[in-house]
Image (cartoon, rainbow over all chains, first blue to last red; front, top):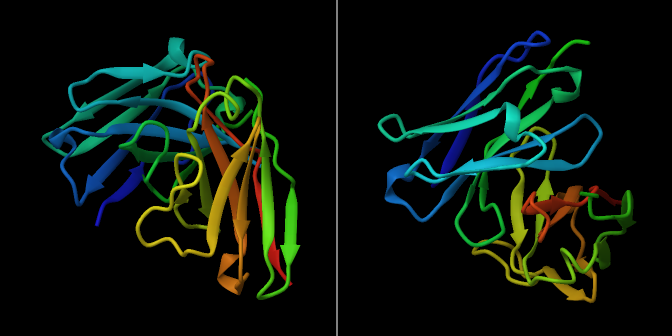
Length: 119
Length: 111
């Protein structure tokens, strides 16, 4: 059973860097065949794709976040991470990690973690 | 990139069928057969219900079906059950540089 679990601070100060980690169990990230993704949902709003990474380290980012975003992978820990710099209140959201194996859907998700950036 | 448009809420009685629409454009829903649907219960991880317009992943009830016509996709839940209550989101691949666009979400209520 594939499981994903987000972890990280729930409160980040403005201008600081938001850092989250997704721990994957039930499948090895290094086995390939999947893109490991971050998706967020602003309060009361829809979902927004942030970006994803392949086990090799190849990344794809949402252009609107690209200048502040780094996604990395640690295959030895079976984890991947999100770093979003220079955060503002607009980055307050529930952040989800998810797996993409086919072309355009996400078949497993974490439960999500709320990150608040006070204004 | 604008979100795909879904009705804010849809309701039905147990046993009835309901349909949720997901309106997009030729750049997303209408241009690709890559529409997916997700069910979200409070405090739980989103669950993939449909992929590639009309395919059900293993373990998803046959009561969930989906289709697409032009720039609009639809999810139908037949034989509505109390456990079907929750939020539903559509998603599509997009030719926009964001790659993926999600719907605004629909709250399903079982009366």
